[in-house]
Each structure stands twice: as C-alpha cells, then as structure tokens.
Length: 317
Ligand code: SAM
Image (cartoon, rainbow, N blue to C red; front, side, top):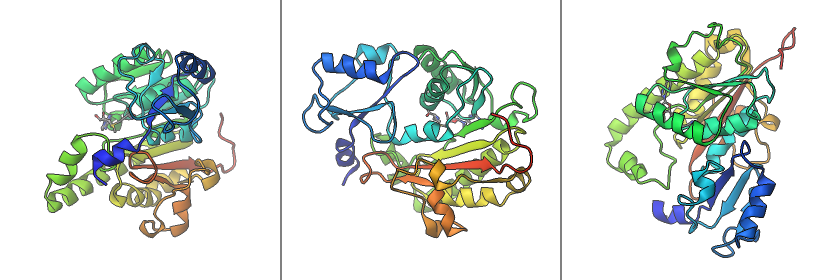
C-alpha cells in the first residue's frame, strides 16, 4: 500500500472534548444531523463509537470536520486513535489536588485530552520549548476550554524536579520529538523517510533515542511521580523498545524503583503489544503497546508506561 491508500482505510477519528459536552450529547447531535450509528464504512454518513477509547467516534474518511461548528468551537478534537492511547493509559486523577505534567505539549491534542480526563480539575502543567509551537498550544488550550492547564514556554529538561511548583506532580506524559516514521496521513511522512540517506537516517535515530532517554530519566527524578507514559509516533525499535529497555537500567529507574506497568494496567484489550525480540527482557514486551500503520487503521505508534513500585509507605493519590 502507498501512504495515500493506507490513509483511505483509516476512519475519520473525532474525539469528543468532554470538557464542553458529553459523548452521549455528541451522538445525539450527529444523529439529528443525519448521521447514523451504523459504522464508519457503511455509508458516508455512518459513524460508530470506538471499542477502546471511550470518547472517540469513528466517521467515514470522506467526512471533513474542519469547517464544522463542533470543530471550530473546540467541542471535538481531530486526533488519530493511536494518539489517544497515551492520555488514557496515563489515567490522570480527577480531583482538585491532582498535579500532572505534559512535558512536550504542542500542538496540545494530548494536553486537552488529559485536561478532559482530569475533569478540568487540579493542575496540569504543559511544557513546550518551541516558541511558535507554544503559541499554537495556547490557542488550542483556550479553544478547548482547558481551565486547569498552565502552559509554560520552557525546556522540560531545565525544570528542577524539586521546584515547589512542580514537585507534587504524580503523573507525567512524555510524547517527545521523534522520527515520525509511523505517520501515514501526512505528506511530510514521505519527506522524512524517502529523502534521507540511510546513513543519515540511522544517525538521526540514534540522536533522537539519546534525547528520548534523557527525557524519561528526567521525568523519573520528580519526587512524587508514580506514573510516566512515554510514547512516540515512530515505528523504529531504536526509539521505542530500545529506549524503554535502557531507561529500565538507569540509576533513576533503580533508585526510583520504576518498572513497567503490567499488561493489565496498559489497555490490555488492545491486541498489538511491543516487540519482544527488541526488549532486553522479552516478557516486558507485553506491557508495551504498538500500532502498525496499515494493519490497525491508525498511524504507527508506540506507548509504554513506567510505574513506581510501592514499597513501604503507600504513595498518595
Ligand atoms: N503531545 C503533542 C500532541 O499530542 O499534540 C505532540 C508533541 S510533539 C511529538 C513533541 C513536542 O515536544 C514538540 O512540539 C517539541 O517542540 C516539543 N519538545 C521537544 N523537546 C522538548 C523539551 N525538552 N521540552 C519541552 N518541549 C519539547
């Protein structure tokens, strides 16, 4: 399949922004407009609820929502199914005391998802180091009515983990820059993979992996963090299983008692798991989640979840 052919088999994914309305209200509204809950490929007007992500709807790929009022008003977010996994797996607590970090936030799809899952309560710090992308992030956050988010134009690696403002964070989402090799419905996918010489590509992946590992190690230094989700839209084991295997061997992981969350705790109903042959400990692959472009009706994607082992004193919610 070419990238275009693969993209045609991917439904139009619409995530309901539950900060502004409920999924039930959305279904009623689309039904009243002539859509029918018969499945995304039955007709151009067909749609369905997703099997794995509670607030995700699947429409026919012919449907465009960019001019739709529900999109313009922030009530829906156009977000690939695979990229909805990280926030759901992080499962941030929804109470007034919650402190959560999105370390690499722009353009803000996952930030708005986290904010909604938190019931727009507590505090969600969203870091973005790039100035232009930071401004995109701010537009997205105001459009999506994310009232519990404080966006910070800073490099996450410069944030002191014991800083009084951030030290209470219990959940961190890390969705750092990656090769983007899993993206099938974007033109720059072609640019990124086909125009680079193989040797450049290899060097690039090695550099990205080193940066990604640094980000995980930094997240593990936050004193109260007990759940860290690391995700990429890459299909390369170098940026995925290899980074996770290395992270588990670091001083930060050992001292912080971090291990991979068991499969039961990482969307167990999703069929495609990590590549066991690419892990130091083959059994750990079950804890990881992958999406294959072309086979899973999503972009290529990878998600892992580190949790702190609970020795002695229970860590607070
Ligand atoms: N999570 C976002 C979403 O779902 O909309 C996409 C994040 S994108 C893959 C990675 C982002 O992280 C880029 O905007 C990049 O500028 C930013 N970034 C990379 N390194 C960073 C760092 N050290 N600190 C803060 N932001 C960083």
